[in-house]
Amino acid sequence: MKFFYDNRSCTVRVFYEPVVSTSGNLYAIELLSRIISEPGGDTIPSANFFKAANKKTVRDIFILQLRKLAENFTFLEHSGIRCSINLTFDTAEYVLANQGVQRVIDYLKPCLCFEVSEIFFKHADTVVIDNILYKLMSLCPLWLDDFGSKASNYDALGTGFFSAVKLSAETFHSLASDSEGRILLSALISYIESRGMTSIIEGIEDELLFSLFMNTRATAAQGYFWPGDYELHDLVEKYTHNN
Image (cartoon, rainbow, N blue to C red):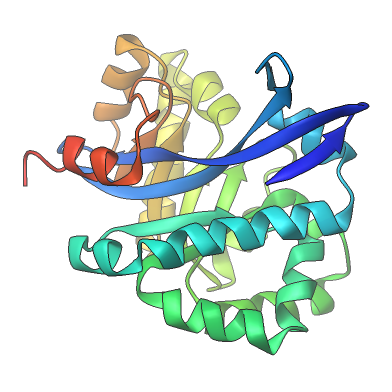
């Protein structure tokens, strides 16, 4: 899929980042987008790209990710692997207004969940947001993404909309840096799990952070510590060898 960004032609490619459990096995896969400029093949930071992208471009990339899941649905369903896709507020409104997209999501439901970040809550008042999340939850499971990255929305933890909470890398790095922070981290994870949600830690980048993750009660984690530059089938095989 090609777009123009900063007066350059760019190709958007879907890649897969593993979410790994404490046992070392694959817990889930997050679908992300890699933006490649042409010519030259330089990778453009996705945050910059999506900040500048218009609504249609973001929606088109979302549809591309759904298409990739559909192409691999039989394999994913057989493997029992759930895949997550990030959902912006604008794309959520698009999904809820488009019955054709909803039918695709219903087909993919056994393997699909949506990640909604805390920024999502800033786009409208509580009643509107709750209504949107309630409708989305009926389509597929929802994960609360990047918890603590902007403004920790503790109210969201008690809504019942989310089946998992992903602690942001910033939150984990900050709390795990000293003993008092680790006490707070443990309490936060315990609270999340006590509400029936899975806790996932982001930002595991090296052996030290991995060891800190393993000393928590979190269910799974993701980050550069686990290379994700694989084709989908190869990724599943690599991280399910202990099953």
